[in-house]
Length: 286
Image 1 (tube, rainbow, N blue to C red):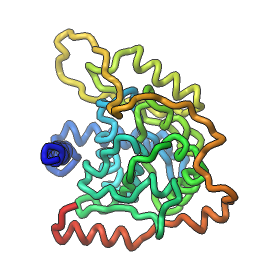
Image 2 (image 1 turned 30 degrees about the vertical axis):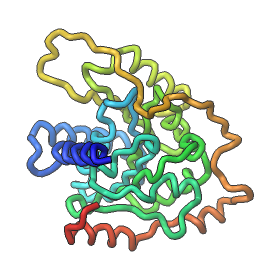
Image 3 (image 1 turned 180 degrees about the horizontal axis):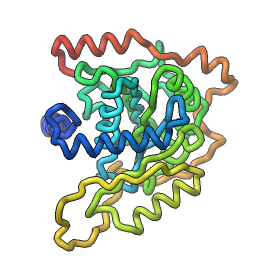
Image 4 (image 1 turned 90 degrees about the horizontal axis):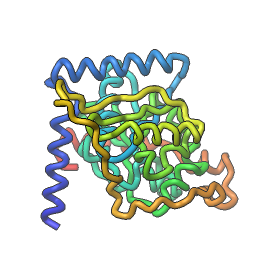
């Protein structure tokens, strides 16, 4: 138990040292600024772009890349919503040092007793985070259900851009099942880990699911690779990496639920944002 707590603390410290901030190096800041500019140009015709961020396997740095991209976009005064849909292995709450008690799984499962609680931090007031919540038994089915479509629709009414953290596509189907509600995907590759075959398989899978690929980010590039070839990277660390078949017939939509009833159930709780922000300002631990 104590070892697990220590590991979580070390993980938070590691993330915090790599999150984009005023003291970040010029090269790092400029890299995210260029990424921000390219995305905004590509999606200029979208009023509130919805972008999914995924990778081939765990370890690419997709979640931290997404968080830093959200921060870079928020620096333009844009209201950014980060949705952690990597429900099997979530980390956005650790990156931003937040609680992960109620989140996406509760929203999509229909277990909310009040409005959707979106988190904010003092450091990044324009970045809003909907954490993953508890690990559900059926993430793919939840993401393919009517509640996910409604969540995205509500998000587009309230925010300027939505970034969705998704699981690696080569392990589970979660990333691809929401292709109809996102404007495109950003695919993250880590230099020295993901080989050509791995990347090709992942991109082919996304295209088979009618996904729009906005671009590929090469992460972890060093000045010299010392002539080493890319190695094969290990599978996603879920413990059980068995991939179950997706059946749209069992998607998580309550029996007899209509679009109107879902609209009445789901809404953003603006008071939750203020409460969480005040906790951070008072110095309470998350």
